[in-house]
Image 1 (cartoon, protein in one colour):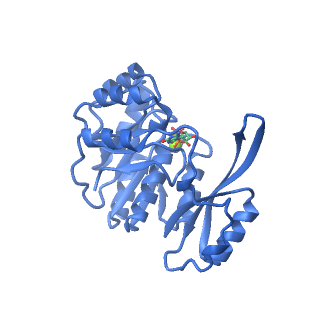
Image 2: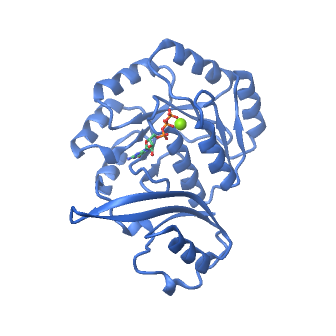
Length: 281
Ligand SMILES: Nc1nc2c(ncn2[C@@H]2O[C@H](COP(=O)(O)OP(=O)(O)OP(=O)(O)O)[C@@H](O)[C@H]2O)c(=O)[nH]1
Ligand SMILES: [Mg+2]
């Protein structure tokens, strides 16, 4: 399955194009509506649809695509970090060691740092690179709706999804899923408080995992520094999110902060199908 983003004036318009191109072999993963300001006064409504498409289906009527409905890569967003800056950053950082098959990648970090989005982006990136044998697991049991987000995503992309409420359950589920090439684990947001770290530790001790501290690049450097100190003993690497929300200069500070800690992946767009680079293999 490939995942693509379409933008147009209305959902119906996008559906018409999808029907013409892919008949029934697509699934809508998410729908968003945005107002785009043009010439300051006149907002333009834009609908953004993320779609999963069966790869075997051939695009038959390409010519019928309306001019105003172009796959997202060709639509520039208002605030963009240059790809060169991201590339430069990625070239300078430490690469993570090879990830053993079936070893869970646990994304943990502060609330709102982009963990769940990062799992979605990782999933799509793997899929687009031919890796389909993926399972998703969530420890995110505290927040209403938090599980739903991933559960719906997994059901649409037809991927095993499990929830672990207790450390022992986590260990058992990981064992059960160990046949999968990649296991992605979402977690509840943690604060620097020892209580929330201890809670997470119980799970991480239950089985062998690769723990990835997910940091939001737009947070103040001293706040990030505190997270590095608090979680220092816990993680094998970092995932850096929201690089699109910072000025070019700040990338250097983030780079300094990371030092020789391996960077597993970075994201620099809110959208699931864009702005993501994975360094782990
Ligand atoms: N601009 C931008 N926004 C992002 C990026 N990654 C995530 N976001 C946004 O950040 C917000 C929080 O993302 P989540 O994935 O829900 O964060 P989380 O860490 O799972 O949050 P909790 O589960 O509440 O701890 C959402 O609005 C995302 O769309 C990114 O790379 N760029
Ligand atoms: Mg989350």
